Image (tube, rainbow, N blue to C red):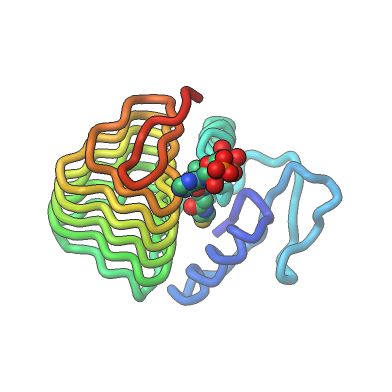
Length: 194
Ligand SMILES: CC(C)(COP(=O)(O)OP(=O)(O)OC[C@H]1O[C@@H](n2cnc3c(N)ncnc32)[C@H](O)[C@@H]1OP(=O)(O)O)[C@@H](O)C(=O)NCCC(=O)NCCS
């Protein structure tokens, strides 16, 4: 497996892949000054390595890199994650230690489900979403493409979060959130348009 993005986030994904028994063939990074990470080689200006996982935390940057790549995408799911046999996880997505994904939930492409997230039944998580550590999504929550849910946030059942929005750490989201906004707090309010 190749990884695009030689960062701290990539270090976590390397741990996940090794825990699954996968081997790491190398990394790719735009920064010409980075030539190794954890003793793995880092290459530059190559877009055809395959299979590959894009290891970049920023959702819009991750999407722009994915759109440049021509190979197949891999996934990384830590063995300690609990994923219902009736849940679906699409390619390019990484699922970190302790995550729980319950029945009927669908996770899109190139998402990050970070450490110990809890995603309950029948949620829909679109492509390029990042759910930060310890966030909780109750049942039937929908998160639109590219949105970022901050660490420890709680989204109550049935709430819909739009595309490319950001929910601050520790927020309690009880009402729908539109596209392209920053929102935070308990009770979670829209702070500004992005
Ligand atoms: C919501 C967030 C993106 C806002 O960042 P920002 O726009 O740079 O906000 P600032 O740091 O300038 O803070 C502005 C004000 O909002 C408050 N604030 C910021 N984030 C808040 C949050 N999550 N909940 C409540 N208040 C918050 C600040 O305390 C500050 O208040 P003040 O004006 O009274 O001092 C950021 O604070 C956050 O929560 N990020 C998520 C981090 C995370 O989950 N990381 C996980 C990575 S894996």
